[in-house]
Amino acid sequence: MAWEITPWRPFKELERIRKEMDELWESFFERRPFRGELSEWLPSVDFSETKTSYVVKAELPGIDPKNVDISLSENVLTIKGEKKQEKEEEGENYHFVERSYGSFVRSIRLPGEVQSDKISATYKNGVLKVVLPKTEEAKKKEIKIKVE
Image (cartoon, rainbow, N blue to C red; front, side, top):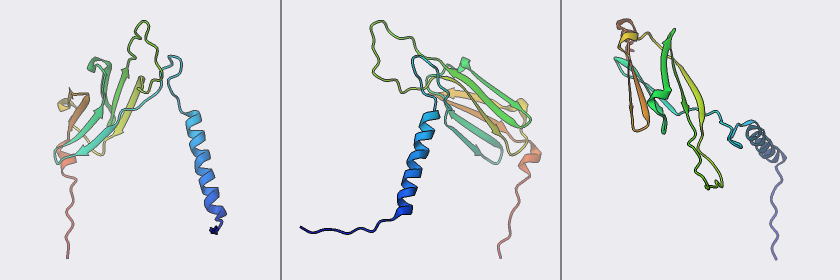
C-alpha cells in the first residue's frame, strides 16, 4: 500500500475557511421569500453609449409596463417598479419558490448631459430600453489621441 505525502498549507486552509464564513454570513443576511414575504431584487441592466445617445436596457420579465416608472433628475436616471406575485391556485402546494417578487429601484448616473425632452422608452419581450439623446455639448467631449 503506497502512502502519499501532501504538504500542509495552513494559510491556504485559512483562506478556504474565511471564504466559507463570508458565504455563510452573506447568505444569512440575504432576504429570500419566506412564508409569503416579498424580497428585494434588482433587474439586470446594460448601459451603453453611442456617438449620439446613452442606452439603458433592463430585464423586466413578467412585469406590466404600467408598473414601471422612469425619471431623470440631476443627470441620474431612475427606474422603479414592482413585480407582483401571482395568486396561488387552490389546492396547489409549492415545494419551493425561486422567482423573486417585490419592488425595485435602479439609479444610473449619466456621464454627460442629455436632452430630457427627447428621451424615449420601449418595452419588448420583457426588456425595457431607454434611449437618452446627448446634448450637443456632450457629443463634443471626444478627444483624439495622436499616435507617433
